Length: 315
Image (tube, rainbow, N blue to C red; front, side, top):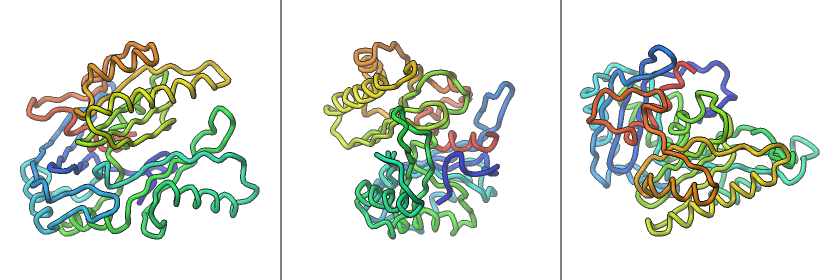
C-alpha cells in the first residue's frame, strides 16, 4: 500500500475518490476554486445492502464481489464518473489499523530498529505481519526526544478484495487508506496554528486523531457503546492534556475540532473538550474548511473522507 503521507515525492493523485463504509459507497470529484477553496464537481452516494460490506480487520469484507462491482458501476454512472480510471480510496475504519510507535531508546543500528519496530507492530496489530500490507513513516520526535513512527496496516487479503472490485471495472487505485486519513486532510492543509482534533465515528467505535501541523500526534481507536463514548473521549483528552503539560516549550493549544459521524453528538463533544481542556471550540463545518457544498442532498459526513483524499490532487 502506498505511503499515505509526506514521504511520497511529488505524487500525482486524481481529483476523484471513492469512500466505502458499511451500507454505503460514495464517489466525488473535486475542483479547486479561487483562494484555495474547493467544490464538488460531481458526487453521488449509494446505499448498499448491509451484508455486502462488513468492515473487519480479521475477516473477509466483501460478501459478493460481483454485486459490489455492479453497484460501483451504477454509482459511477449516476455521478457522471464512469469514464474515470484513476481513484483514491478511503476504506472503512475497521478494515485497517493505525498505530503511533514510540521508541524508548535510540537503536544502535538499522537492524535493531527493524527488530524493535517489528516487535511493536506484532503486539499492536495482533496479526502476523506477513499477512499485512504496511505503510510506515517516521514522525518528529516527541517532547522527550524519542523517535516515533506512524504505521498503517491493512490485511493483504482485505486490501485485495477492494482492489479487485475496482480492477474488474478497469479502474486503478493509487492510494488506499483508512477513512480517518482522508478526513484528516481537512485539518492539515491550511497551516493553521495550534493542534486539531478529528473525531470520526461509526456505529460502534470512534477514532480520535490529534494533529500538530500536518502530522498526527495521537491516534486512538476505541470500540464502545454509545453510552460509553463520552467517558472514553474524556480519557483521551486527559491523556492529551497531560502530554501537553510535559512539553518543554510552550505547549500548543487545541484550536480546531472536526467531528464526523453521530456516535457522539457535536454539542456534547464540544462540552467535553471545554470541561477537560478549557477550550471553547465549535465543530468545523464544510464551509469552515473551504468546501462548497452546492447540493443539500449530500452532507459533509458522507463525503468527508473521499473528498479529503481528492484535495491531494493539488497539494
